[in-house]
Image 1 (tube, rainbow, N blue to C red):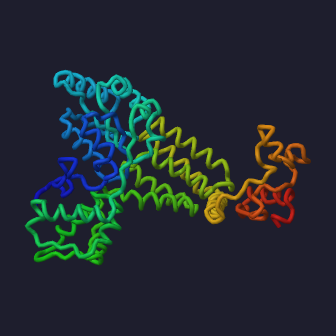
Image 2: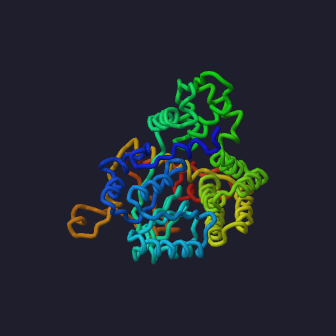
Image 3: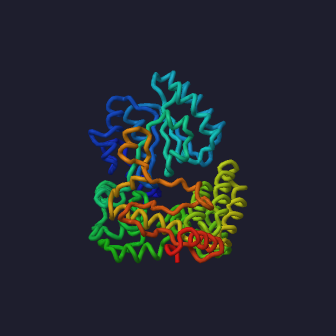
Length: 424
């Protein structure tokens, strides 16, 4: 059997061969328009793994016949960026066409690395295509982001994955001669999570482990084979989402030993340190919250430090934070409070703001009694004056209930002193 993975063997060569992303590649899509007019601006492709970001960049370059240079943010530095830009510029001058510079996982570039791209993009020396799985609003510097159009690529839906499977079975030189029939798609769709590469990995694994004769793929067969051969299916070996889940649950469960172990698994797997740090920030608020407000400060400081330091030293900073969070008292009251409030908003709709809480910047608004009856809390004893702050329909509604921990017991006593029976 050919050594190249199935995903490589059937990689699209033209825009019309790309499955999914019709909102961008269909006749009314922006990227289709840019390719058709050969007027491609610098762009950022944002989407989950396995949806074809790299393939799309390569196909665009092929379609508009531009020189194509590729860098991976994992193993490239400022020097590499400058060398490629100089090479691209010289090649572009010779060919008469502006080269495309593709940066894979651009979110992993530091600020200085991204800064090194600015002049080339701004002066049109290259057309930048960046690919990222992270929100570019947080991961790409504003100066560079303002010079790029951001396009969101979506996970492949079940219909798209079925089309992908049919292409593999009909066009792949290895699979097409075989007697293969997919009877059920649900399990394949579920385990791939809309990731086309994982979907094809699973399909290829089923074929490789099949002895002989016709292969009929069912949900039960998929679940059995993938479960027994998980490492072969997950070719990256990182089990990305399962491991981060175990990491967060270890912190939530107050087990620093588990937290450090799963952190080590991510460190050894080459996980993006900023991804880990970001999850620590979330955990500090979702699972620790008001039981130890300093946890959020620690997590935010960790994120800032990791962004400046990088691997391998970041492992120490992340370890310190993970142990601190796991060892902290726990409370999810802030998490449950906002969820309950959102549920109420969705249920009750846009209730009117009470008149005494409304702003009254004009005489007409004052005549309409905007702000009438509002009491300025700082004028009261202890900076408190009892009054209603919710819409009339929700007058006695409680979204936040203090948790059973030392800090929130102090909050509870304070609220009972102010609001009396409302918190009894």
